[in-house]
Each structure stands twice: as C-alpha cells, then as structure tokens.
Image (tube, rainbow, N blue to C red):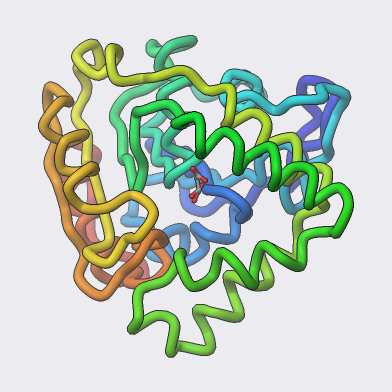
Amino acid sequence: MLARINDIDVHYEEHGSGEPLLFIHGFPLTGALWRPALAKLPDGWHGIAPDLRGFGGTSLGREPVHTMELFADDLVALLDHLGIERAVVCGLSMGGYIAFALWRRARERVRALVLCDTRPAADSDEARHTRLLTATRARTEGTGFLARELLPRLLSPVSARRPDIVARVESMIADTAAEGIARASLGMAERPDSTPWLVTMRVPALVVVGADDAITPVGEVERLADDLPDAHLAVIVDAGHLAPLEQSAVFNHDLELFLERIGAQVSGPRA
Ligand code: MLT
C-alpha cells in the first residue's frame, strides 16, 4: 500500500483488522522486518508496518537529515491518514528511538509500547563519529559495506547459520538507497537522550531483547525495563539484535500475551 503524506509516498504493509499496532523497523532495514509478526497477529488486531522515509519503498523527501522527530511526524501523519487515533507502538532499535520521539511529540497517540533491542541513551561521541563516517561511505561507496560489516553484529550465532534469515536481512539492506542510509545515520547522531522521559511513559510496555544482542546488550535493555513505570522484560534465547525476526515464534507468543494483557479481544493466533 502507498500513502501520500508530508510530501512523500509512504509504502506500508498491513494485516488484520481491529486494534491498531504500528511497527517501526530498525536501521538499515525495512518494514519487511515485521512480516513474521504481521502474519501471526492475533485476531482483533490491525498491524501496520511502514518503510520509514528513505527506506525500502518509501520516498526520501527534501529534508537533508532524517531526525527521529521527522520519522515520528511521518508516522503520526500515517496514523491520521488511516484514521487511527491511538496505536500500540512497537519499535526495534532505531524504531525504538523513533517510538521515544513519538512519545515526546504525541504521547496521546501511544496506547502501549513494545520496545525491542533498543536503548533510550543518545550516541557517545565515538558513535556519532561512526554515524558521520557511515553517511559519507554510503554516499561515496554505496551500501554494500553495510551487509558485510553489520550482519555479524545483527544476528546471534544460531541465526547466522540460517541461510533464510541471512537472506532476509541482506535483501532488506539491499532495498534501501544510499541516500536514505546517509540521512538516517545523520539523524540518529543528532538524537537526544530519552532517558529523562522514561518516568513519564506511564503506559504498559513490553521490552524485548535477544540474549545474544551485541548492539544493545541484555544489561542495558534490562535497565530500560527497570526505568519504565510499567514494563515487562522478555529475553529471547538464540536471538541477537533482531529478535522478532530471528526467533519469530517466541516473539509472537510474547507479543500475543502482552496484547491479551492490555485488553483487546484476542481470540487466538491466525492459521
Ligand atoms: C538498528 O538496528 O536500528 C541500529 O542498530 C540502531 C543503531 O545503529 O543505533
């Protein structure tokens, strides 16, 4: 599906009907990250998984830097376009940074949170420097280096031996143009520290992390769950940074239990 909002064409996938659940992918991926979750969404739920500005099938627009706030504004506009007032917001890694921005800008649109393999902190100086380098390399070399350099850090040892998972991640990375990668890298470098906001996030939250996550290690994600007023932590064995893709059955089960807890009419998984 395509939606024309904020002067860009947003590509999104959706599944089911009922209570809205907005999925936000990580970097340098696309909404396809959430296909296993969309396919098994419990009855009574409407899942929406957009490609963020500059990723996959969504156009770039004119902004030279894609800040987390800009992404959040696009998502609010997408919810408006779909006639959705409030949604459960589920973000992975950069998608989590965007969920924090969404909360800062439009918390009334957030019914509950699912935060996967993410952190509230801003970048260190060193991480910021790496972002700038990534932007420059994407613009000068293209995006081939991303799959080579990131894949070993994204996946658990078990997932790295699964050709289906490796192929899915490679294909998502290949689907994004270099300029989208560059602008999102610059945007992540600019993001503020969301830690002071955590106490204000008084909505039910499910916090998920892969036990083998090398990018947002378990200890850091545990602290995020501790600092949120109403969070449940799920540590997923044999998953790395992409737990919802790597161990989709386990993630889908945890998600279903959470959705039951927050009270939609969940009548069992789809066949
Ligand atoms: C992601 O998966 O979105 C990235 O690891 C986020 C980041 O680079 O900080």
